[in-house]
Length: 385
Image (cartoon, rainbow, N blue to C red):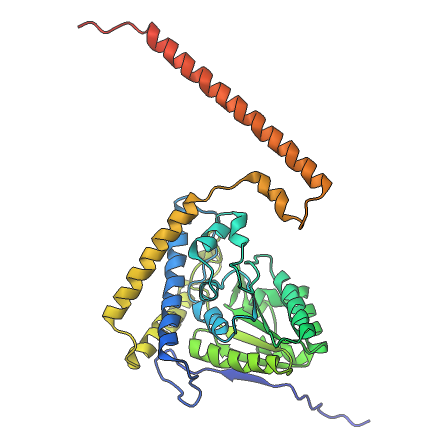
């Protein structure tokens, strides 16, 4: 048997359309209606502003630990734009812009990071899964949904998100292997933001690209400039069309950068240099897309002012809705199964009795304090006139 190089048909390509300096490859430019371009910009801007507001709420003690998506808005939004309403979207936890595009209210995003179960409530008629923080676990869920889509035969596609750190987890590889074997309508998107908390990308894999990992599982990989929303849209359209017509899965590596911290519980200055961040700031997807729209005559200062005013009003209302939310701890038990088990009912009854008892004790203690204060006021001597 002679020694020879194997011929492997799977492709691994790289795609960029709009450079950071504004240069545009018109041959690759996706056709997007003007109204959609403006809406895409507004959604990216809203995502950035929502990020900023949530960080403020967290720093003020009004929200729990928060994971920003600053600098990664294009990677998720471009994919969301390439899907149909009936397709499935399975996020990790930095897909803020995409969730806004898919119809998630801002206050629901706040509720999730505020620790409320209501933050996992998917809007009616939206085929999405809730935000998923455990690394790579959503890959299996998304693969399962893609399998269901194929079995139903309705032409639906599942898009699943994870980060570069997730590619070191077994769930990621198991999902890709199954998707390849069963030729599932799956688009797996890796947001390669170069850092898995404090672990740099080069410590995750020795492979030249993450996109090439698709080859091991028998399908194509595509590396796109994740800070170029036009490239993300173009690449997603190809992958979705392929999946929808029976061509199987695609692995998309969206090369982006995390301009902020991993979460508010993290200090990135301990493991990365400011010079690295400054190097990536000119590639920020928001000003890049803004420049593109201005060149097309679709954006000016007046339009931006209107957009910002609309976003500000929406954010203010979202904060009011978020802080008006009241949580009933008894509801914990109602979301475990479609019907509560006898054990859960017993536990719920026990907690209810405990809370009622504490309420009575608190009321009694308050009454005693008030009586003591009243008695004390009667004993005080009247000031001489």
